[in-house]
Length: 376
Image (cartoon, rainbow, N blue to C red; front, side, top):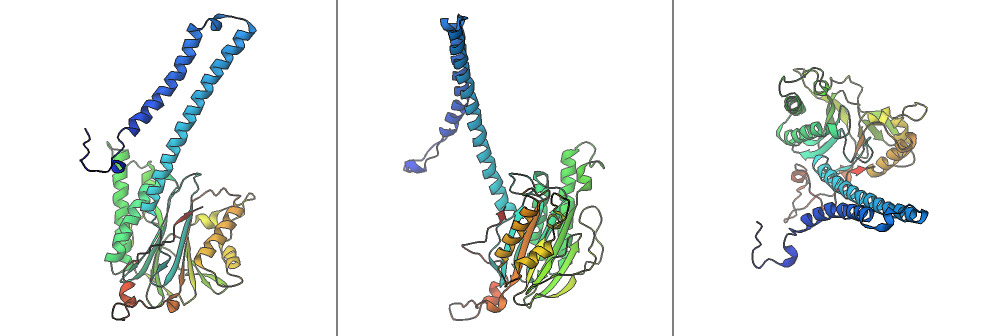
């Protein structure tokens, strides 16, 4: 029994009868339609006649009953679809949280395109946080796409959001992610094969994640650890070049990490330059003739005339991708753009006029107008 305390406004009282009423309507309407059809068939003298007029009336009655049932089922399915989309949106906000438009002097924008029609989340993951060690970014791609990859995305992102602040070295952050992934796969294997443990033929045994960890220091220095992921592109004026050409480590999952996890020094991200991180779905996208999508060319066209914002770069690239694939990509695609605008950032002044921009950069800033994660 639900008790409502006295004095609670009527508008705030829980609507305890709405759900039972909906259930009663869901069961009652088909029953009424069926009763109408049965009553007409056995209770109406016209239904017993075999003339043309009687047959027309009988057909009209059963047609009306069938149409009513179809409309009722359609409305119920649409209601369930709306609820499923609401749940998917809530899951999206938890897994891939909207990134702030500015992060410690970096202009940030991110977007994802899911290969599953109607899905709002897939197998791609990304996050960017400002820590006392610098701005740390992760971009990853879980094997497969769609709903089956959500658990792995949640495990990796949850570990990164903690380790990015706790660990002083990128190698130790990667170690935390690797242990979190292994623990998640063991638990998933036990759930799928409770009697015999992990089955070698199980998809869990073949699960892996390509991953890129980046750290951008206050002076623009970039360090990275790459585990089987495509290297980002650097946009400097109208020039498009890969951040590094070093051989990446194997993806997380199937192979143990090496003992030496020293991050690669990738130079500096100068003022006005941008980093474009992406998943391999962008460069693996094909058109109807089987030609691969050229991401460097699309980026070059986006910045050909003048420097543009990260948001404009995302719009240009996704527009070109959808045109190239005729609106039907076969893999999840995620892009994240960071533009260095620290020289144009005004210092934050405290109550006494002190410059507190340094301390503000050590925590992920809150914003009342976050840049949403777009799902095209």
